[in-house]
Length: 133
Ligand SMILES: Nc1nc2c([nH]c(=O)n2[C@H]2C[C@H](O)[C@@H](COP(=O)(O)OP(=O)(O)OP(=O)(O)O)O2)c(=O)[nH]1
Ligand SMILES: [Mg+2]
Image (cartoon, rainbow, N blue to C red; front, side, top):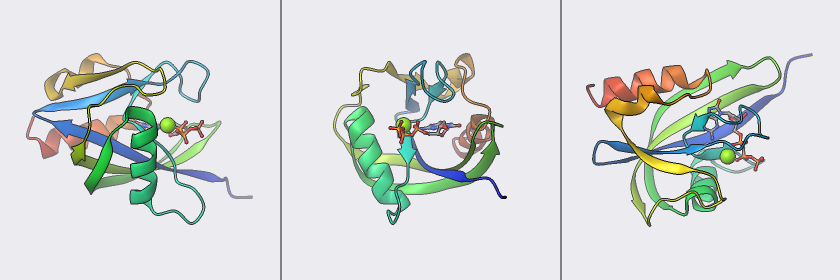
């Protein structure tokens, strides 16, 4: 049987050479690591709608527009994910961890100081290329 793949919309929230990242709760999959906010795409939902919904829930931002950065599939062994990663630089609101989680703006050149899930290595590589770091 082929493994079920969890489809996730991920937002790389960008402003003034900084990204807004959050810490995943300890009890969640890949808990305790930093992430780009986002969550599961529901049945019949578009990636953009999922991104808007998740970013409003998790960081209280209204996403006006986004641009696809990449799609990655990663098998964690216990879970297989497809991350649909979008750059979000057109938004309104003030970002904060709206679900009680830690959240912070981090300079692009300080991203390496934070631990992310394994799938994010490629994302961060791509971000660095894009912003010419
Ligand atoms: N949001 C997000 N998820 C990531 C990243 N990297 C990565 O491997 N993942 C994985 C971890 C999880 O298995 C999955 C995202 O699931 P999630 O727990 O955020 O989904 P959700 O917000 O819908 O959570 P829930 O309310 O259903 O519990 O994708 C990332 O940078 N951001
Ligand atoms: Mg989430």
